[in-house]
Length: 99
Image (cartoon, rainbow, N blue to C red; front, side, top):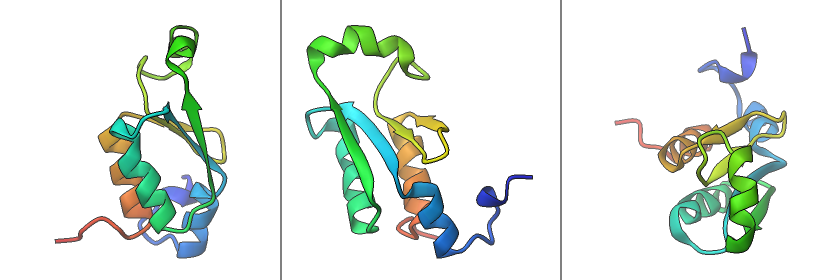
């Protein structure tokens, strides 16, 4: 069982999961902005890779669902879909409400 996904992980484990991650989205605020803000508020060091619209046609086939944003974790795993990414980041950084 992967210990990084248990409910008893520590802040140190969270930093290991998210530190060095890469958020890939277009060079506009759009659907990637909330995740950019959450990572920044949480103090996570991340790469903000912005795809230019002319590059999208070539880049699209490399994404899990043929869409952006995509969050690539430091271990290489990719998470796609804006709400899924934001919920994951929010929970990992204790920014997601518990009630």
